[in-house]
Amino acid sequence: QSALKELLQEIHVNTKPSVKRVGRALDPNYGEGNNDDEEEDSEGEGEQEEEHLTQPASTLLADLAEKHRLRRRTLMQHSSLLELLELPSLMDACVRSSLYEDALSIAGFANTLERRHLMESVSEKEEQKQTVVVGVVSEIRRREADLRRMLIHRLRGDVTMPQCLEVVTALRRLNGVELERRNNKSGEQHDLEGVHAAMEMRLQVDFLEARDAWLEGGITKIGSAQAAAVAAASDKGGASSSRTSAQAEQILDGIERYRTRCFEIVTQFLAIFRGSFAPSTSSSNNQDHSYSLLSMWTARRVQTFLTSLNTNLISHVHDTATLRDALDASSFFASSMGRVGADFQSQLAPIFEPLLTKMIVGYWSDGLNGMSETLKACRDAGIAGPLFGTETSSSKDNSDGINVDDVDVQSSRTPHPPRSLLALPPLARFLNSYLTGLNELRRCLLPGAFPSIRLAHNKLIADTKMALQANERAALTPGLRGEATKLREAAAKMKAEFDKCVEPYMKNSLEVALGSFDYAVAEADKVRVEAEKKAAVSRVEAEERAKAEAEELAAKLKAEEQTAAAEAAIEKVKVEEQDNSKEEMEAADLQSD
Image (tube, rainbow, N blue to C red):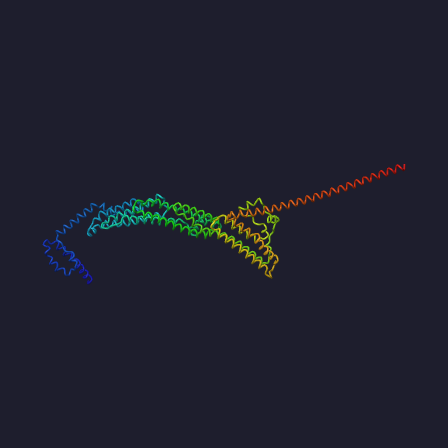
């Protein structure tokens, strides 16, 4: 009961002022002079009674009539008001349906509403009456931000030049709507040209950022899950050797895709924003800013490409053929960018030349390590059989003789290896590794790598001499077990053969592989002179030998003639003696008769 009494008391207190105001409004004798009684009753009613003074019935009815007339006028504009309230939803539907023209028309109409209903209101009271228009305009402004984000997001995809131009045109119209809104604001001074230049610069930045995201999204990183899936799809059940080729193909495909997309972005930027500023206007500096912006973006993309290319080549390229293909693709990319003033061919050499030198030196180091391990294994086992081979008779002949007719051919290509190395298999295998490195070098011949390759060649010669000297010292160590004599003989022979034959041959082969024309000509002249000298010596020896043979034959013939004459004289004497004996016998027979 106490709670019910408290509730009734609260209702009475809350409704008492309203009951009094209604009674006074319906009392025809109540006037403005009766406010004294009201002041006496207002002590316990609080401050709300003072704020809401009761008006007479005539005034109240006039106010109600005015509100009724306003509501009737509002009801007559019911359809127009519904269309006005539906503008934010309609613009949102247009944005979602990619109807940019209709959405921009609604944004422009929002500026018209703002200019007609909001800009003309001077007092705050009049502005408070336009709450509906203010709400509609603010909602449309939020939809404008959504439209801008959607347009920029569209630039992040694969769009053609007409589509790109359509999106940029819509963004420029959206900037125009923003400029119009700034211009409609009264009492504020705006540098519209400066604002327009800033908006255009911001549009260019947004364009490059969006297209940059599209560029990055289309490049498959080597070694990633996506690249592994592509490799698995291209070679199902392939061997491990095909994995390297797949990675090389991904590198080449990435270079080509990067080139295509970079060139497309630069072409689109120049086609769209080159004429954004007229040279005759005062904003020509902004044109310079647009070109500098494109230059900075291009420089950053080129640097990113070079960094990625260097990482991929170091990790996934292990042969000079693939390195050459990557160099050709990168050079074509650089020359293509040269048409827009971004040629970076000079920056490719510091990436490819060290890799080429590393690959060539790798082959040489493998050959030296293999020879050293073979020599060590033979010393430890005390076996000299693997250190000796069979030297054919043709190898002996070709090791000393030189074909004069083949000198010109040998001067332009790597000369034939000396066949005398067939008697020393470890040294022959080392030379084969060296020539394999030179063959790889010919596939990707970069002049800038010549100094480092020459230094590596000199270091290889010094390391090989040290290895052979160490092998000879180890073979001469007392107490060497097994075939110690043959091991010492092989060590001494390999060292002498390297100094006499292998080192000059390696130097000659290197110069020919590097394309040193002067050196090749000088070597050809030297070989030709030596061949002519040997041919002249051989010719003199042949003449002397022929002369000696002729003299010997003449002496032999003379001796034979003398022998024949002596035999003929003896025969003649014998015949004469026979004749004389016959005559004597005939004479004796006659005498007896």
